[in-house]
Figure (cartoon, rainbow, N blue to C red):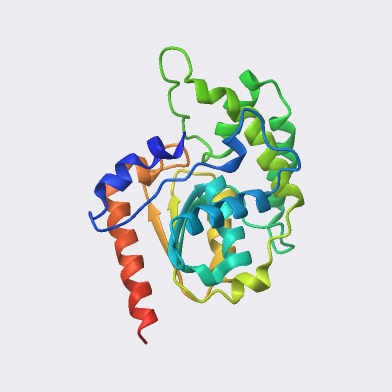
Length: 244
């Protein structure tokens, strides 16, 4: 979904004094992905948006592909961040310590991304759910115009994940608080393993599991008040850390 719609409920639940901006991914800024697209394009977009608002320090929250971008941003420009919130990153590095089950996901994602859109999107959804969990019902009526960009964007991001070198040592040097929201009904070989691997990287890591949620029924839409409360706690934790 476009960021304004995806995060609308969450933004409404945050305090009025929170200066929050919902930013779309750069891969969807044009009708087709930009030439030479990589996660560096997304990182540059986040930095440009922050500088345009005069932000020297800020909290960064990302969901799915946006959470992968947030990880890449923390590795490249961690000094700008006072905290990092990851809502089920679609990808969290091509590191050798991943399990065989996790490694097997990515050739399958690349295969699925190359299918015709009417086959690719349902398969893409099913892969990210725990076995036995039903995918969300397809909305009635014609798809919104922005859906036309999604197959190409998904292919571009999957290819970018395949080639990107996420600097784990740089992430180890990021000592600000990190929050990870995990849906218990999401594919554990992907998302729970990501949480477990990142817990070994960050020295201030907080995992919160939402028992009834999955990747396509995420807490920022289905449990916005609870997630807003968790983010406020994260930000307070960051402020306390800054004063000690």
